[in-house]
Length: 573
Image 1 (tube, helix red, strand yellow):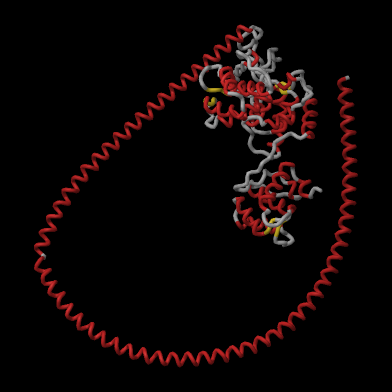
Image 2 (image 1 turned 60 degrees about the vertical axis):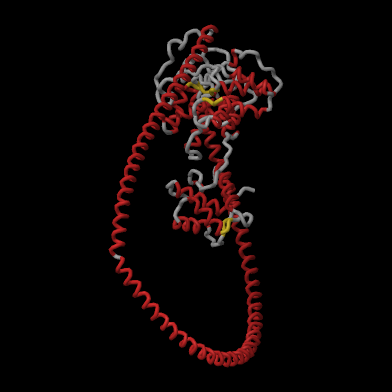
């Protein structure tokens, strides 16, 4: 059964709040103790005064602990404080990002729910899409109504436009609307760099033709063009595969160089458990530039071939044309979200799309351009290494000069030390008579010390006699103290007996009072249960009334929509 707070928050908040409750609750089930809450909320980065106010608001009944309901109240208030948002009533209707707790990493699966998908499909159909989908210009006008920054809308377009043909089909449109909605309700504050596979899978439909799930990157197709796309052969690597393989590539390319080295790729491919001979053949097919590295597209080709081999397929002897990655289209310096009023070019970027020879020559040119880029990068690396070596040489030369300066300084110090030593020897010869006189004075002092020691010995003997007398007196005092302790113990026993009698009388009185308090508590609980039952009945009546009003409002809206549709049909007729 859902709790009240779960019905008032978004699914993402409910999932996150439950995770945070599980992390905070360590010692007792279903509650967070006061000590646990103090330690957990201290990781929010808020000051102690503000956290005390949040605790008092959440624990209004002064229970000393937090249930899931009151813990959710505290988390919502922390989220408000962290983001400078003024809470409104009811509290859970306040839209905030998720609270940030240091050291706690929230795991949230990002998907589009069937209800959201259905809602986005309705909006998609209302835009009267063409056979290719909604064109860029119409999408720009619709998305601009969100009032999100233009750079975020452009990034959303790049995530959603999987086919890269300037149109959004129903699945791509749902992806774009999903991220716009999440940014508007502040469920997310940043966009992913690549499309998560979970998002794509939640909107892709297995009943759609396979061509709908292919990534259509053709040579010369202008991104964001409003002209209908030309017909061409699709790449064998589907959009779903490419999304998943790009995610792996990004994890391997930690320095974001745009390629991964052969050793890293081979180590990763060995996880497939394919024979080394098969992996070597896959490498020869995928490394189309013969550079010993793999770009993102080449890595996708390699992964496609490995999965094909794992499912029982055979590896081709040469890479088929359908597996050659389509060249990346040259994007204009603007986004369809940022600029309107543009038209498609009068002709294709490279001419005839149907000419296979032109396609092959273009692929060759792209390969040569990649090799030139690689060579230029290698040259720059060599120049960078040369510059670093020259800097190291300069540093070493500077250190050599410093060391020489230090050696000269040490030689000067050695000479000064020799001069000082000679001066000290002269001083010793001069002061020698004074030392002889000091020696005589020392002998006289020793004679006086001996006399003093004899006097001390006499004093010690006298002290010893006094100590013996004192010891006798101490023993007498000890005997008197022991007798006193015996008497004191007898008195303590008498006091203890008296105290036990008083304690027995006190416990009897407390038992009587506890019984009276128990009876009073039972009567109070019975009264509270009666009042709770009356409140529950009143709440059910209120909810029934609200449901009736909501149904009347829904019928009114449907009637208005029907009239609006009739008016639109009348105008079209």
